[in-house]
Image (cartoon, rainbow, N blue to C red; front, side):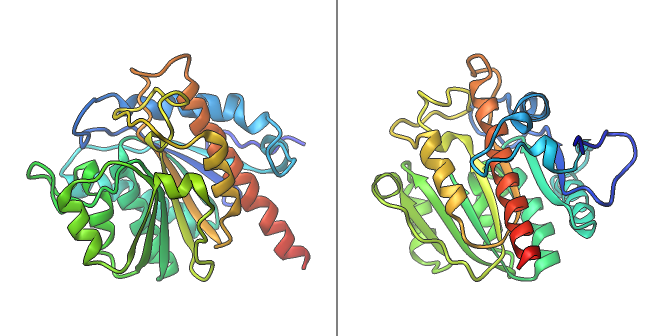
Length: 287
């Protein structure tokens, strides 16, 4: 049964809402992430939702998915981010699960603001090679290197768990050490064991694709060696016990990608998380 919705009109009954945010003005190194939503969208709807997921379902046959298109308008930093926030808020009001394709990592800030307004208390689970804890970077508070610092300003964010970190600046280390809400799990520990993530709070998940080793994901703006494998990231995503309320994939750069393999991994992570959410919803309804 095909439940895939088209882009024309709006379905208040969509299980999932795909949102593109083609914005990379806050990238501090290579530009190109603004091209990613189109690539990820094409691979998500054209391939990932038709593949058998770890939960043994094909998302395109089991779920309704609405494509909101790309969300981006001009203006100040707050106006640009505010438009994405408003879109995510509308999605959540319709009881739909937001799947957001960035863009650079600043994508996460307005998305979490929207989730926080809806759920009051949330935790954020971040997969990233970098802690993104600069209070400002090169004079910019909205740099993609400041994402988690901006999240800490939101009183509704009660915990940030950052998995796979392997590059650290002294300034970020100091922010981490004086803030008990931040839990950083470095790459060696992530590879060695599965770290338990608290299940009591709704969780928003952000996957910065540079958490992966470049051998698996060359299409990112900032390569960092000794990264995670796709299998390891997927196992972590599937083992999250907290109720998931939203997700983004960010920092895919088609200009450095090879045969779209990084964009395809991003699309597959989105499909796998959506299948997990759908399966858990059905289990809760049945019980």
